[in-house]
Image 1 (cartoon, helix red, strand yellow):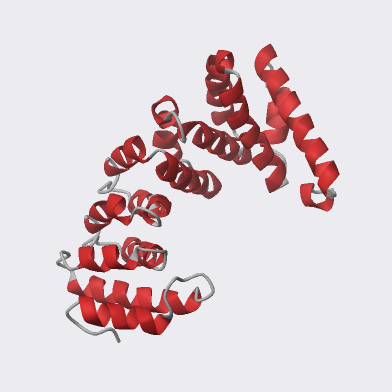
Image 2: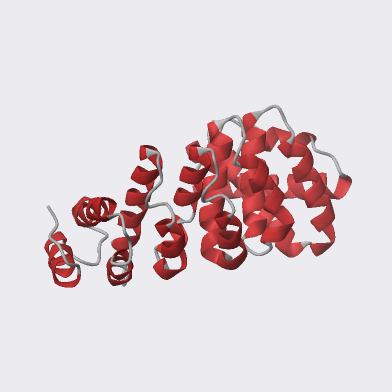
Length: 256
């Protein structure tokens, strides 16, 4: 039976059990139950486990060394779900103390399994949103990495910070405007669109795009911004027509 097959009370009881089991494992230095939760087929069991690590990190400073040691061991697992959950747990810590867990992301970017690399992207998103300075500084190291997938993952990973503070990530995105890989450029256009439909962001994005030299990519980005305002019309601050009008007023050149 999956986590969400349980009723609310049962889910709360299970989450409490998982929290207590993981705390006990950390206190005793035993990883058996940790592996069981970290490798569970149910995504939400694994999520409850890595959220438990974040809670314990905050509530039990005396266990910081034990937590780091345990996550290091679990990250060496041959099971991709265990490595994925370890990365997500490191992300919970990194929202406050990134430098302590930075090495998980240096390695996770190059993991052989896509679910681990996706966990890196998800963690960069949440850490970059809550703890941007060290995370964005770290991301800069990989913007021009020789591996195109690493460049794409970094571009995607810094997106969430841009939804509220686009000025923080636009200079980094600008460095990818001439990336030779179409998949990276596609992600760049996607991220610009995801930023621009959020409250107060379209003006910052459009103004910054004026300084970009790759006008072909800028035009693609502007058209993506227009399309996003239709695709996410229930969540966009502006209507699609308002977005078109704004771009036509503030950027020299028309959208298609």
